[in-house]
Length: 181
Image 1 (cartoon, rainbow, N blue to C red):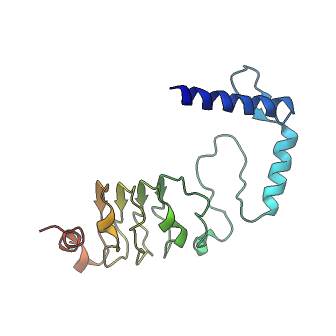
Image 2: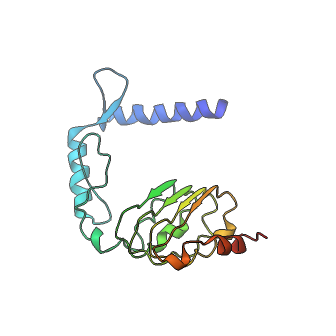
Image 3: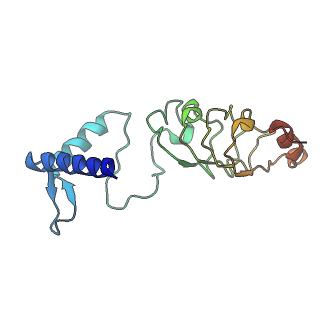
């Protein structure tokens, strides 16, 4: 318990320093802090100039905006490079035809949901995604189960129904890949 309290104290010390130099300011109720308007505007201005960042402002932003430049063309291979802590990735109902290479390095990913990705024809090896517990590949153009699925020992939920009727029953292939009877 001591280390948790020490980390909490360290976090409060950092917040206090940021408040003391006017980078953060206390909310009226005293229970939260917010970024100073000038600092916020400067941060937005800087990140808008750098294409590595997506800047969307507003309270309670919950959905990924559809007007992101180039998203309809597919995600760049490096799109998820700085999102290694992501645990759930839901790309359902998107028109992606391939997954960016950076997805296969997301070692903390617990759920990968690719339901109704009607252009998706194949997925690379999933062997590195050791924490994966849920994999939904239903209703896509894939004809075979991805390589490396036999390495996913924590996988609890797997769904795969392809538009290719001859492949809708992937049970035999699945059992063979995971070393079943």
